[in-house]
Every structure is written in structure tokens, then in C-alpha cells.
Amino acid sequence: MSDDLRSMFASSARLLFEREVDDALLRAAESGPWPGALWNAVYDAGYANVLADAEVDDVSWDDAFPLVAEAGRALAPVPFPETLLASWLLARVGMAVPAGPIAVAPQADSTWRLEAHGPGWRLSGKAIGVPWAADVPHCVLVVAGDEPKVVLVRSDALQIVRDYNLAREPRDAIEARESGVASVAALDGRLPRDVLDRFGALLRSAQMAGAVSRIAAQATRYARERKQFGRALVAFQAIGHQLAVLAEESVAAQTAAAFAFRSAATDPASPAIAAAKIRTGMAAAVAARVAHAVFAAIGYSHEHDLHFATRRLWSWRAEFGSETFWAREAGRSVIRNGSARLWSDLVDGSPAAARVAGVA
Image (cartoon, rainbow, N blue to C red; front, side):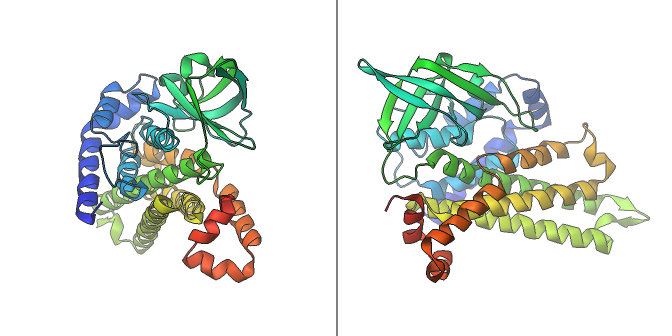
């Protein structure tokens, strides 16, 4: 996709999310109702299946970055990023993509077992922290083993216990007890075995980059409008310095996430994904702290809308692997590749990335 078309992609996504998502929707979503109108708008725009649509040529993860970043900026309370990942993976392994939203089950700490049962399969095991599992008709998961399998299962075949993250986004616990599955396929050998966790981290990095840009703009606008002792807050050196730090963190998060999406388009095991999750998580921590300092007490009140972004940033940092988790993964990759490869891996990680994931 050309830069002009990618820019149009970003503009259309921003307009859609700005039109469909407001404070009233965010507050309503926290009390439980499924935001059907928002989901329908996203789905009808084709965003959720854009990486799996055979009729859309030359659209890659690189092109999908602005869609996910804008969803993060709007704090959209629907499983659009998860459905984007699920539909891409299903299409990649030759499975039919069902209509509607799809959940993805994090692989870390999951205990899936898959057994042949006549002409079909039976699934057993558990996973926690599954986004919107109780709200969607299907869930995608990966069963580990010598020959990992991608599994599509209907949500009504699972036992689901509703749970939430700090931002009151559904993060459910699911369990299968010799449940039938909709379809099964072998994981593409060119994909990393932790594909859902790795690409889940990729998605959260873009969402965090978008949310950081949101609160950076919000805090800057407030500091210019709010006056104290006859001067705008931004005129105070300490506040101006903190806003400059916030702007730096926003640019760093956007750059890291965008580069990771570009790298993932050609190398699904790129170490840039780990780097992006680490860097955007760091930016999220700084941005939330600075924004709350600028807004002071009013920003901590439930009536103010700042918490919709900061609670998501705190939650998204931990999902699909924290900074600590991915820093350890990055360290292990350096050890496996050897110190002689460190510089080349930093500046051009494609060959090493494949070895890190064990796919080359």
C-alpha cells in the first residue's frame, strides 16, 4: 500500500472512531452493555478482516498500524484488534473466517490439550485474561506441542467466568472440558509458536501508542487553557518541562510500535515486537504519571475522562507480556545469537529473528 493510501486509511479510521466513541459510550461500556453500534461501524468498514480479505490486495501489518493506533487513541471498547489478529491467523493457516467479533486466548499460562475424537477433535484446558470471550461467538487459540495447532472454538462450547481488567474491559477465564471444536489446522511453520502472545503484544503496543498520544494532546491543551496565578500552566517551567517529556514519550511510542508493525509484515518473529512492547509500556507509565500531575486532583476524579485512558494504559502494559517478560525474551535472544551478532541484530534483525523463534 502506498503512503498516500495508508494516510487515507489513518484518516478514515480516526474519523470513524471520533464519530462513534465518546465519554458516554465509554461509561456505558464499563457497566456491561455490548457497544453494538460501534462494533457494526468498525466491522462494516472492513477493518476487522482487512488482513484476511482476499479481495483487498497488498494490505499488510504495516498498513494495519494506523487502524489499531486510532482504536487505541479512541479507547474503543470492542475487540477490534483481537478480531484483526484472529482473522489474519485463520486465513494464514487456511481456515474459514467466521463473521463477527472473535476472541483470542493468550498462550502464556494456558493448559490446552487436543485429542482426536472420531472424525473430529476434543479440546480440554484453561486460559485466563481472554478479551471479550463471553461477548463473542468464537474464540481462537493455539494448542502447544510438537506440532502446534490453531483451533477455532465456539464460545458456547466453553465454560466462561466473567472477569475484567483495571479499565473494566472484559478479560474472561475460559475452560474447555472435552469440548467439540469448529475447526483445527496446523500452525504455519513460518510463524512463531507464541504467535498469539507475540502479535497480541504487537497490537497492545499500537493501542498504547495511540492512548499516549491522546493524553499528551489532552494534557497540553489543558495546560494552555488553565490559568494559575494569572498565567497559563504551560508557562510554568516545571509544567512545560513535563509536557516536553510527555511529547517525547508519545513520539517514542509511536515510532517503536510503527516500526514493529512494519517489521512484522515481513518477519512474524521480529525482535522489534518485543522492543515495541517494552518501549510503549515505558511510555505508558511516564505518560500516565505526567498527565495526572498536570491535571492534579481533577484528573483523579471519576467524573473527569482522563482515567479512561490511564487505566487502559496500566492494564495494556501487563497484557500479552509485560515489559519484564519481553525484556527477558530479548535478553535470551541475545544470548542465543551470541555477542558477535548483537549489532547486526539491532540494526537488521530479520535473519536472527527467525532463529530466535525457532522457525529457521
